[in-house]
Length: 188
DNA sequence: TGAGTGATTGACT
DNA sequence: GTCAATCACTCAT
Image (cartoon, rainbow, N blue to C red; front, side):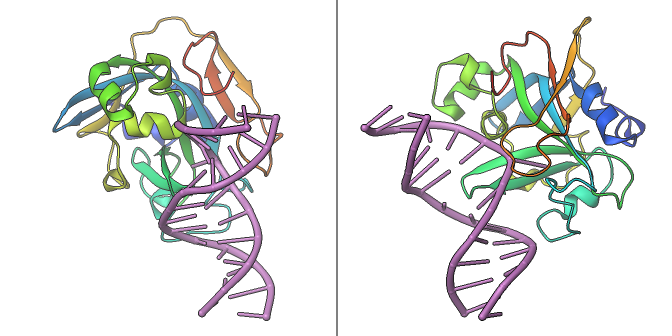
């Protein structure tokens, strides 16, 4: 079962924390890959570091779409990042999925990523997109089809909020969330 | 119409 | 630790 739209329609920081421990699944023609979300970041509409800060554009239009849809964008011309759109339609907010713990389809991930190092498969936003086989075609798709998020089986998890990384604006905001002791987070 | 910038990664020193 | 790769967007001519 997938998460309801009410799950995503809350404020973005709450969704960012709630997504930790959930299972991201992608059924591709090559097989299924899945991983537990261990690291997220919240991007708010009034946040200078967010793509939606300076209004809607062709690139970030999906961010303003319905909650529970995917926002995939190209970064640095080379990599892609995967976000989950949150809050109400028309509000440009989303949660960036930064890292996963691989649980299914690991051999397929290894082929896609061209490495056998399990820790290198999904320990970063660009990496997990490639490992999961997510493409720009998935931009704007709802997360209840081939690509979906389901409740995880992880029982206990300690969540840590910390400063975001890799950005130059509003770096002091504590909008990055990780599961404590997760071995798959994107930066030490 | 053109320069500047970035929610990154991987290869190299 | 440093740096290039390379695309979509923004901002300035």
